[in-house]
Length: 225
Image (cartoon, rainbow, N blue to C red; front, side):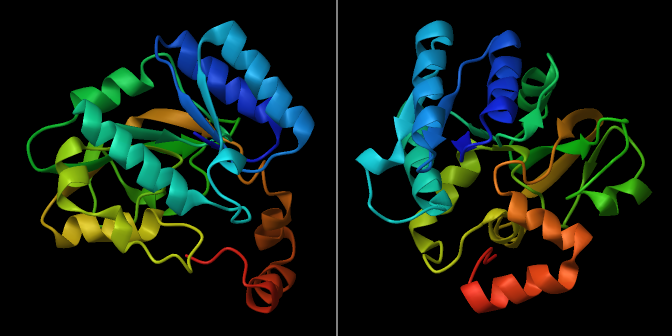
């Protein structure tokens, strides 16, 4: 779980995973001191693992590439799949079990569709509103809101190839998995709650003031996909 402040949302996301019977490695991406301290306290309380990226790099946030490189290496060393749950996502008690049950030979990614608090499909899966079924194969991009990357895919794709000039890699990796011949799956009947951009509130401009949002992207080089 990559984390950048928004501690209330982050804590809710962490506790949902722990309550479902799993632990989590939290990668703190240069959060404020009070956030980092709260994460350390949660580690003492719940047994989660906290990695403060300031101990690994002086590169400014976002450091998603470093998180992915580190997590992939650890997953392969353990012979395990990699599950990414972002800090603005709340899983259901059976979400992770359901994702693992979907993995078959040739599976690349398994993602859970996202809902808002009212139970409606929301960003980034607007396209899924037209889909029907329980779990469907898709060639469209999968977000890393709540996504499993299989060990088979991790062994086939070296994350060292990820462009260091970019900020986010979910679109690239999901398309690369398809290019390599993997099947990507989207679970429609096991949604997670998504509270978009809680950790980076400036990105809410995408909905309230899209012109300003895209100007910030261009002028400040932010949010490069």
